[in-house]
Length: 247
Image (tube, rainbow, N blue to C red; front, side):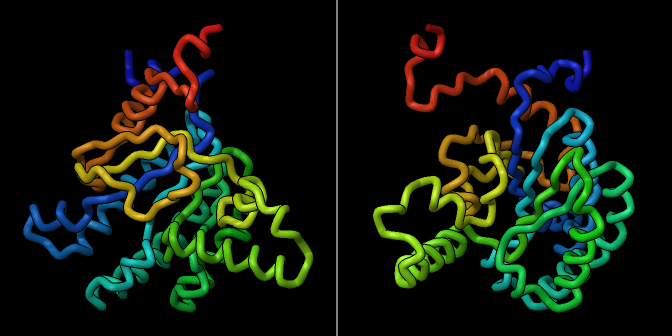
């Protein structure tokens, strides 16, 4: 039986988040520049998005570029932005063909103009698609997101449109980039690193974490299915005991 057929379609996570790590180290192992790893990582993105759509995952969020990544060597950042523009432009027809909606979270206005414009055009072109929502986290960090949410809430208190007593988990969540999305139930990270690197800190509070030693360019559909099967074999208690879940 294939790994795909072992997945229980009744227990699928609605939202999966992925830290796509290891492109640079993958390239280094092959004696190539880091951008070569990023270029080859595009196939893993394509395969993973296709796999998610095929089995019925509603939301797939990919950590594509963090705010900290701006500190990388300028040549790498420029090459990454060019690759992003090219990939979004090239993949938009495929997203539409497969009924996949593109969204993005992060400090999008900090992106280069051509990258921002291409992203907005692709989001507009795919906005009516309903099969799966692909979310790119671009120029994103969770601390930035949380601070922005706090600023927006503080401003509303200052303007007296809300009271400080109105502040709750639900209100705070409604001011995050992911306000209209379910929280991720599964977070996957490639490359053998065991940390979440400033990614969806609030949203991952009860997510199951799955780590694989594979570098992102080597990540396949079967690796994605394997992570989901592992998730489905876990007991999600949300603070309760196993006995409470049974009763």
